[in-house]
Amino acid sequence: MYCQRVTFLMRVLAWAAALCLASPVCAVTVKKPRSPLVVFVCGDHEYSGEQTLPRIAQELERRYGMRTRVLTSFPDQNAEENIPGLEVLKEADLAVFYLRWRRLPAEQIAHIDAYLRAGKPVIGFRTSTHAFRYPPGHPLEKWNAFGRFALAAPPGWGNGHFHYGHASSTDVTVIPEAARHPILTGVAHAFHVRSWLYHVLPDYPLPGATHLLMGRAVQPDRPAVDNPVAWTARTEFGGRVFMTTMGHPEDFQVEAFQRLVINAVHWALGRAVPRKWAGPIAVRVPYRGVRVAQPLFDGRTLAGWEGDTGGIWRVEDGAIVGGSLTETVPQNAFLCTTREYRDFILRLEFKLTGTEGFVNAGVQVRSRRLTQPPGEVSGYQADIGEGYWGNLYDEARRDRVLAPADQARMRAIVRQDDWNEYVIRCEGRRIRLYLNGHLTVDYTEMDPSIPDTGVIGLQIHGGGKAQVAYRAITLLELP
Image (cartoon, rainbow, N blue to C red; front, side, top):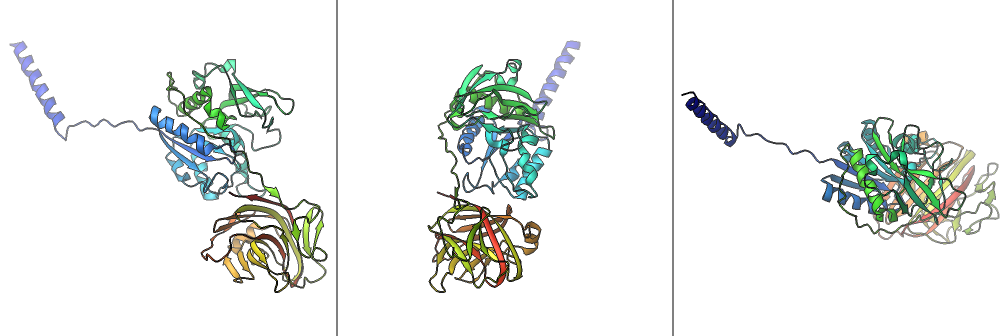
């Protein structure tokens, strides 16, 4: 009888379980684990990171079950002031940086700052040691030390941080004490990369970092010492860090380097490093190199410029100087380049001083010399002077401000009677002005009849006892 009761009870329980599983009320939902999101942030001028890192991202999605996003400088790798989409860092589980000398606006930097403060992990490649370059006195100048506080690396380029020449390369070996580190799982004990060795010792990596790989320069351009090329550490906010000073596009063809990177992603996420290698990754990306800005002024003569060089314009103390502090400048005067330019990034420093009258100057771009009135110039002008700082003015053409800057904001930015910096980016129909690192104007020309090419011009405005000096004038032509 007892056995019959047990058998009956078991049947009832089995029937109830089957009924519950069939019921939408009792059904148990098994939630699928969320795949980690890896966000790649690229913009490095030189090493084609915006092409190599997407291949790593594809591999992580295809073979390792991760989600990825790749963010790049816009409109190209040379655009230093804009990486759209950084708000996705709020959702990221890992941020991978390959940056070089960016000057992102405060609202974009805020997303990176929030990510770091959350104690999340970080991976950095090569030039991320000098990820940002803001001018002295800029509110975001502290970000020039990103390498130090985010990657345990040197805080910018120079001051003992240098390389051993573009013609050199690097032999890499595993540091014996680190051989059992998870990131080195399956990584060849010795391999060769095209990257020229970065010198970071003796101060970096920061104390507390774990050195993983050592590099030895091959055919260096000066006496060389071995330097670490990969290490782990912690950010100031406790996040895991993997940093490598490798990252030349040819490095991504080396299987040992590929495995190092895939392992580092898993380690940074707190995941087990794959014991089995999924196989080599096809990466064929050329080295781009850096397009170097050319000086428009040699610091000694006015070669390459034309204007009133017998009266108004001269060279003093390594600067082009126009106007006078003792005599009123009779009329607008311009010193112009002897050749024209279309798309470019123009950088220069200037200092405007005056004692009375209208104290004003400006920088002409995409401009033309006029025959009447003699010496006049027509075209876009980046304005200089009280009430006009940072404006884009249309000189001797539409004779009006095309795009005004916030003058209250400008007064907080400008260093009166001292040196300031203009960066003028002309690209297609778009013109952007940056004054001491701050975007003041972003203007798009809607009139198709307005020329998109012309000379560069330096102006001193008439009607005042005023003097302007220009120096460090360079121009990078854009493709």
